[in-house]
Image 1 (cartoon, rainbow, N blue to C red):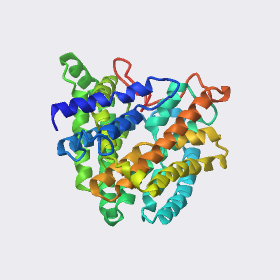
Image 2: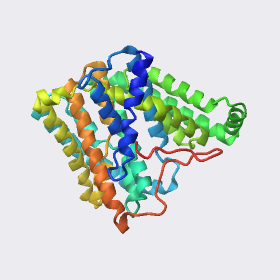
Image 3: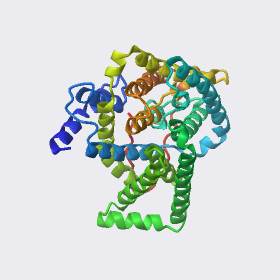
Length: 399
C-alpha cells in the first residue's frame, strides 16, 4: 500500500461527511464511506486492492477502535437505565427467539447452512447508531429507557454470540477466548475503578496534559491491540476485543481528553479507512449476477425489522421497535470475518451489508417521524456515559 493509495482512500472517504451534511437525508457517515469503497474497490473501478496486507491490517485496527468507541458510548453509568433493564432484556430475548426461527428459515430457503449467523445478525442492534440518533433528535418519552436498555443488551449479547455462530467447529475455543477477553475487560474495569478512587487516574491525566504525552490514547491503543491479539489467537473477532475494552472504560466514565483523542484518531483516519476497505472488499457483482443473494439481503433487512416488531406485542411503540432494529457492527463484523476466513461467500457478505443498510434507512425514517411527535420528544435524552475530565468531549452523531 502506497501513500498515494492512502491519500485516495482518505479523499473518497469524505463522501461520508458530504452525504451526512445534508440534514434532511440523515444519512449515517458510514453509508457514504461504504459507497466510496464500493466505487474504488472490486465492484467498481478497482483502484485499490482490499487484499493488500497493509491495507487489511490498518482496516483491522480501525475495526477494533471503531468498536472500542462504540463500547464507550454504552451508557452503563446512567442510573436511569437500571430500572429499565428487566423489560429491556425481555424485549431483547423476544426478538432473539423470533430471529432464531427467521434465521433458520432463511438458511433453509437459500441453502447456505448459516442460519445461526443470520439469526444473530437479525437479532442485533447498534448502540453506536441508536444512541447518537436519540441525542441528535432529542427523542424521549415513556419507552426511551427500556428501548436503550434493549439495544445495549442485544448489542453486547450478539457481539459475544457472533464468533460462536460463525465457526461452530471451534465453538469451545471461541467461547474460552471470549471468556478470556471478558475476564481481562472485567479486571480492567475494576482496576480503573481502583485508580479512580485513589485518584491515580487524575494524576495520570494531569501528567499527560502538562507534558502533552497523550498517555490516555497510548494506553487505550495498547489495550485494544493487546485484546485484539488475544482475540486473534483464540479465533475470536477483534470486534469483541474492542467492544469489551470500550465497555470497561464506559463503566467508570470516558475521560474527555481520551474522547477527543480517540475522536481524532478513529473518526479522522482509521474508522473511515476501515469502512472504505470493507466497501472495497465487497463483491456487489454477486448481487447482480445471482439475484438470490439480492433476495437474501432484502430478506435479512426485512427479517430484522419484523423480528424487532415483536416488541409491539409487549406494548412497545412500533417506532421504537423499528429504531431498535438498526444494526451495523454485527452484520459488518460478520461480513469482515467471513471475508477473512472464507466462511461466507462474497454474495453472502454483500447481502449482510445490504440488510444492515435497510435497517439504517428504517432508523432514519422512524427517528425523523418520531422527532415530529410531542410524545416522542424529551428535553433531556439519555446519552453516552458522561465523560470525566477537563473539557467537553466530542460526539459522533452519524455513527
